[in-house]
Length: 543
Image: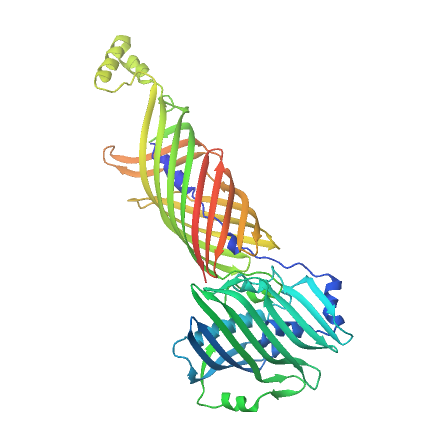
């Protein structure tokens, strides 16, 4: 009968919401902050160009020259980027290149494709600078320097290294002439430690007064392990289309080169289907996590179980075992694999499968009721003789005592769940619901499902991409456990049970999450309640 206890405990295993799925919203700028750039003739388009040269317009051709030195191993490349946009707003972006100008030692196309995707995404982050950090330095009546930082809140987690950047924009006679972007502190990027980063953008003004990029020079130094790293690139517009001036050719020679039919090309896939509305949300300054994820988790849970009734195979055994004086101690371990997807930026769904191993000891208080049964059937003298006989056989059925029963059971577990989350600046909130069920190994039937809910509030340390959170965990345990453990040969029938239990459904929760690089994260949770405690460790990968 006591096998019923770990069955319900196994059903109660929860799957935590992870803090790397939280979104962060930028703080709305004040009117005074919004007007600083307008006062000096700086348009939103110019600020966009500082993040991405792909903001020039719907049709654009760029020339990119790169040099990469890792511990004396030098690679160089020379390619073109061609962007075109159809009437429905669909963007087609291609890398065009002369194969003889690509270094065979490097996956140039793959690396440039990564950088290009980042530039494409950055061009949607017009409001991703910190309005409160704007400083104006009027060097003379004609020359003004405007400095600001990129926002800690508005950038996606995989390109959040831009939060370390400081920008200085030079304005002469109301026209932007130069923008310099430098890092305020070292940061990690794609396995490299970047110590110094500098991006210098030279602007020029067209006949219609529109400001465009004349050239962009990027210099970066750092290391990869023990090897010194130096990176440089130069980006120059070749041609683009303006609504008023039509096609503007900056460099006719390079345009002829990229138009040569012998030039090869690779298409860059820019957009993802998931999360739906991701681009729209990013433009509002909200951090959207990478859409897909896999994770493995280990959980250890200890529980103390009280009882209030024993009904085994249709027989009420409360006369023989005192429920109020009986209790169980259970230790259970689970190993689970989880796959998830962000359908919407704030809505994640997932499925889990795994194993649960349960070790339990049930201490049942025996009442000695068999003495009364023997005396009722055999009389007082016969009852005493029966008690003595069974005691002589090593089984004392006529004296009260404690019966200790050890158990070990293994289960399969499967479940589905969802997480809703929202955040503001460093703070976030989420709620996760999981519906899971277990099946005793060797059995065909799954036990009744159980609902687990985890509401949480947390705080994110933005520079270190770490979160701490507190909350609660609800396990929807029933007041009774009932079920069928299957056919038992010795009994000649199915073993059924209906046992009343006393368990607290709520427990406190604390934990932390740490993002490791662009794709990995580790999460730890601790639960403490009146009748249970547990800890969970999870290692995840997002892409």
